[in-house]
Every structure is written in structure tokens, then in C-alpha cells.
Length: 171
Image 1 (cartoon, rainbow, N blue to C red):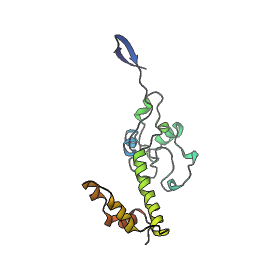
Image 2: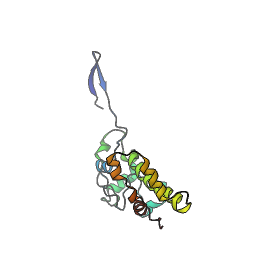
Image 3: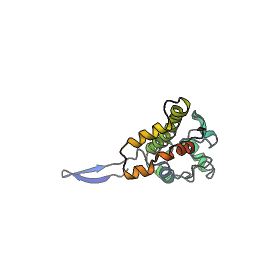
Image 4: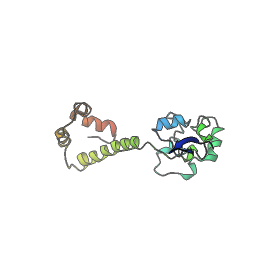
């Protein structure tokens, strides 16, 4: 509606801006979009209305996806659906949090990779017996790590790390 007046090459130009996407980590986005900031809450997802018990399903239920209509219904239900109050960003033209499909890729990537690599290594070491934990630790120790990396990654903690991150490890 209102633009910013800029002088470009001695010519007055009006530049208009439009918000296309808000990006950030999950907690930051939940905070600025006025959603629940507790990921232990019953309705913790900004994309859907699935409760935390059902959120472990492997398949998406399209009927539970948030949209601008059920968003208003949820506002009127007083925070039991994970929406704390009306989002001020909706005052901007063509923006609605239910169509802001931005995920924290780095966070998701790091968490998924950490989980997956434990399962893969568990299978290779304990199930298929392709190599031992000692061999893995020897390989890790051959890398030229910085002092900080050496502190974070000690070979004596690998088995404990497997057990902590992966309850399937029983050996």
C-alpha cells in the first residue's frame, strides 16, 4: 500500500515490499507467530492440528492441516490448540502463518542424521558384524581433529552415546 521513496540515478522511485516467508528455528518461529513455545504441548505443530500422541504417525492426515479457516476457530478456543493469540503478521497483505511453510532445515538435518547414523552404525556393527566398535573408534582416532573436536568426540564415549541415543542397542 505504502512504498519507500528512493532516489535512484536522480530519479524518484517508489519501492514496495511484500513479506513472502518468515524463516528461523522452530522456537523462534513459534514465538514470533504467537504459537505455543513448548514442544511438549498437546498441539505443538504449526503446520497441523494433530495432538502429540498421534504426531508419531508416519502418514500425514490432510484433514488436520492448519488453514486460515480453522485458525480462526482455534483462536476462539483459547490456546488449547497451540495458538496463543491472533498473529500480528496477518495484518500484512498476502501473509498467513498457515501458508508459511518454512522449516528449520539445519536443525532437522542434524537431528535426523544423528538418529539415523546411530541406527546405521548399530546395524553395521552389532547386527551384520561388518566391523567392530573398536574399528570404528580407530578410524575416528585417525582423523586430524582440533582440540575442541577431540573434547567433543572421545572414543570411550561412543558405546555410551549409542546406548543413550538409541534404545535398540542391547549389546
